[in-house]
Image (cartoon, rainbow, N blue to C red; front, side, top):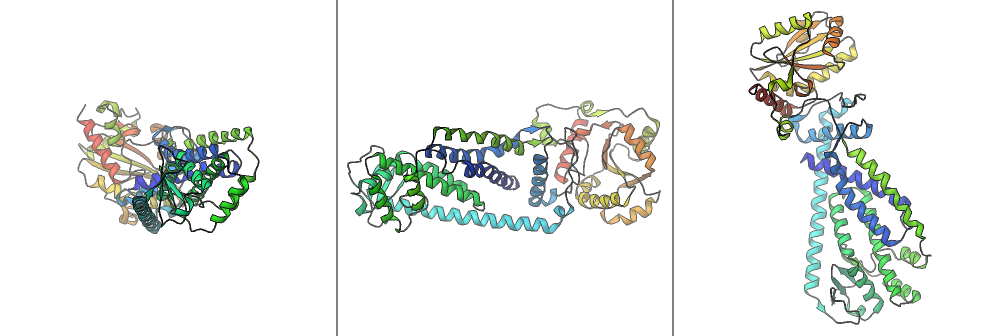
Length: 487
């Protein structure tokens, strides 16, 4: 469900990015056939561009990174067991970390998100039901109508008359007319133009988009623009058929006050008469107006950039590794410890106290109050994920912390509410800096995973409760255990 809703948000962003420049640059300023094509392209690309997130990029653009983080929080609002609070995220190009405000992690924010989702789904049900009954009514109207013959006969279009219809309209290959309009040549030609130009397919595509993005104002503006373009094209066909401009203007004015038809069809009076009259009396567009369509290229590039998925440093999930088709062995994911006495002594002590156990080391430097508050936030948000490790007999977590001046018991007591029975090792700030140099890390906190044999698990495959929720942590543990069985 979360993935679907995230796609809806991406879809809305893509449609907005494509439509806003069209409205500013092309609307009423280019040939109608070109505008129709651009609106159709907007609908189609607006749906397809969000799938660009399947491609990964190492380009550290701030937009795609921020989008990725926001989408993660949105997904976690739908999966409570996966909620986590990533204060920092690291990207593969080594670019700066992204900081998120604490308010995103509060429960009331998730509640608001779920309320908005419920309202969205209610809107989809409402508009879906409305469209369904409109189509049912349309089908019934076609079934109750009688077919007629006119001088404008077309092999692939059926012209029918219905006494209950007040305004002429067309749908797919059907033209439905009131009895009094069946003999009006201009009206018949107008509706035949809709059918021959296949305007119903545009309308159907737009209505499906409106159904899914009903909350987006731009989609309704696009829908009206598309209806206008359809009417402009049909009006041009009428004038090319031999009907004079004055005669046709009079017909449009006569029909201006007639009740609107079903919204899913192409009706004679669905577009405001004033705009249509302006178009009828305007000069032909210049050939150079086609060149304006080049605006699409930078917009598409911008959209691809926004929806590109940034590569994150951090563990691959068990599903990712299995789907790669390569069976990793223990030697593929581990490396020897640095040849440094203090590191080796510390690791050997851990191995002696935790035999036959994977140990996750969490390095954290608490040398000021700001870092202490950040650590409290981390403990609270990662407690659920760390509890997954605490429940296992073959896994253990050790906090290696500087800045608590050796007051380990007092520290543990103050943090007891959010601890999962982890071991705490107090070190000095100088020792912390030394470990940073030896183990080559700069992040705070930093994770290292030790194997029962005293090897280091490579960063891409280690346990990380800071960035990932319980489900992914379980996958990481399963992956490590599986690799250990394939030495």
